[in-house]
Amino acid sequence: MPKITYIENNGINHTVDVANGLSVMEGAVQNDIPGIDADCGGSMACATCHVYVKDEWFNKIPIKEDGEEDMLDMAYEPNKLSRLSCQVIVSDDLDGLVVTIPERQA
Amino acid sequence: MIKTDALIIGAGPTGLFCVHQLGIIGLKCEVVDNLDKAGGQCIELYPDKPIYDIPALPECTGEELTDNLIEQIKPFKSNFHLNERVEEIKKDKKKWVVSTNKGTKFETPNIVIAGGVGSFEPRKFSIKEAKKFEDNQILYSVKNKNIFKDKIISIFGGGDSALDWAIELSNTSKVILVHRRDDFRGAQASIDKIYQLKKEKKIEVYTKYQISSVKGNDRVESINIKHDDGSEKEIKTDYVLGFFGLIMQLGPIAEWGLNLDKKTIPVNTENFETNKEGIFAIGDICSYPGKLKLILSGFHEGALAARGCFKYARPDEKLRFEFTTTSKAAQERLGVKK
Image (tube, rainbow over all chains, first blue to last red; front, side):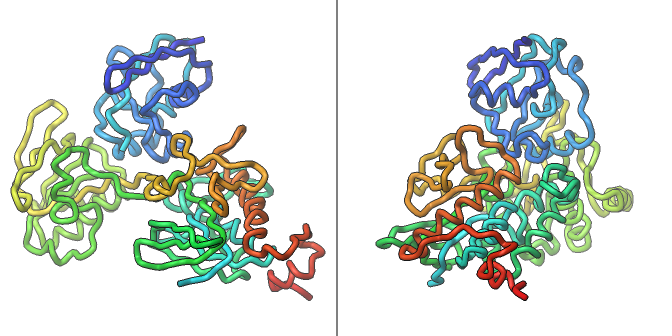
């Protein structure tokens, strides 16, 4: 199973197994990793599952589809490495992915 | 003081259908919602997005679903208290006394929380100094546009609210529009208008910039904005408007002594009552083993919670299970009795 590492804003690391086909958001919620709220449950309607993807991974994950960039406008302190974790689907290619959780989601 | 059998907090699909389920068993209810219209997330977040998993409706939009639910509960003539947020609850013998931020008071044996993930509030600037000027020179909605006349207004955001206000206020004020990227997500006609106004030097547009600091003592005097490349720019401004959409906050409900699990309220699955007698939670806000955050689950939860309300609203009566196809009483309540 691919391993995904979530780094909290305070530096605490969580490396967990996330099954293929789940989103990076679901991986966090199911493993009780704090800081990813996912208020809308993954329908790309709230921007509270915002993460920063580690630099070297950003171009390796599938690119944003329509609407994600619009939602990111509403995220807390978005930057060029920002993604909505509900839109990043885990696969073997993402084994070792590292994302950082922002200080807040709103 | 408004006396009612049940108070529903939240006018999303779950709350609306609960009105129906209360009505069909002869209970009256009132509905409070912080938004200016019924529909909850369906209307606020995805009015045009199709939904495919409402039983017997192969496809419908959030707006259609809301319209149909409102139509379905018309016979029960429930009052809606929109633009109001429930603030405080107090137990008075067997009743709850509930007050809103507008001072409305309800006396009811039952409260049904159908609050989704909380009430919608504007998203705010992330910088700490913004708080100091909030509601004065830093605003997240426009209540009186006359205060902006002949002033310098910095508007942040890339959606329709930001663009519409930039266009509107450019008639009477100096407008500076700031957005975090080059693309705007508002209507194309508004985007075209913005660029035309920019060409005519009627507004200034800064893209790939975000706010980095606010300066001023009693009033905002200037702000700094920071480009993606790290460079900063100081802008003199009288007012700052931020349009970053809405966020859901649990708000005062968190202070009511209910058990909370993350942002949800644990309930029993027999009647969706919480740890407090006469307070029920249904829809996305409730949690129990196996909970699915689906609209259809909210309908089921509302049906059972309505029955749960009956015993507190009519303690001396016994509720008999009936079908709408055959129950004369239910048909009378629906106004369809032949």
